[in-house]
Image (cartoon, rainbow, N blue to C red; front, side, top):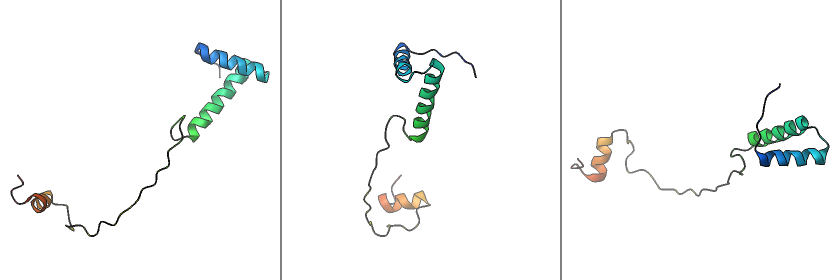
Length: 85
């Protein structure tokens, strides 16, 4: 596919260095850089950053004070008293 790409100056310099080091033509260097970046991006849940690992401690809080909390009025009455309004 042919397209026009506008590169930032800094990226053009980096790509030029990479071309020289590897003896590649511009198209090869650009395709390789894009491919590597897209593969890395797809493999990372947060591009450029590793996903943090978390450990959560669980606690047994016992049985709930109310078995059924579907009725908001009943829950508020139990928690705040009948004059909750």
